[in-house]
Length: 73
Image 1 (cartoon, rainbow, N blue to C red):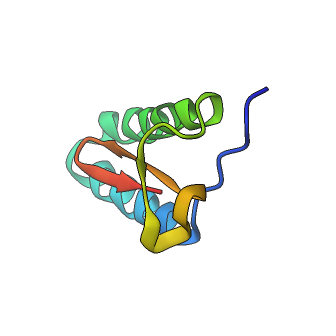
Image 2 (cartoon, rainbow, N blue to C red):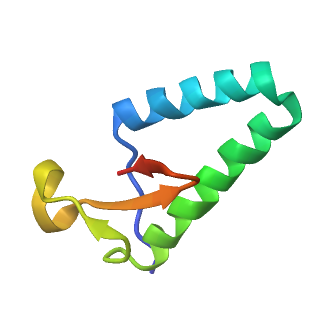
Image 3 (tube, rainbow, N blue to C red):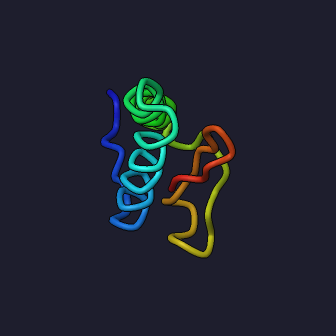
């Protein structure tokens, strides 16, 4: 059964800032980037222990995914 992926509030704020940037410099890419970021983290719902473990955030419970050089956990 897939697990829920919980985004940290700061990660969502960062994603919003990245989207705002792309809306300015590459408007057609902004929504593609955001959709891709959510899709990249979807793998965590299927394989909860995939990605790099983030011990400074929550030990074994927190894993991160790198998407286009951006880190989300």
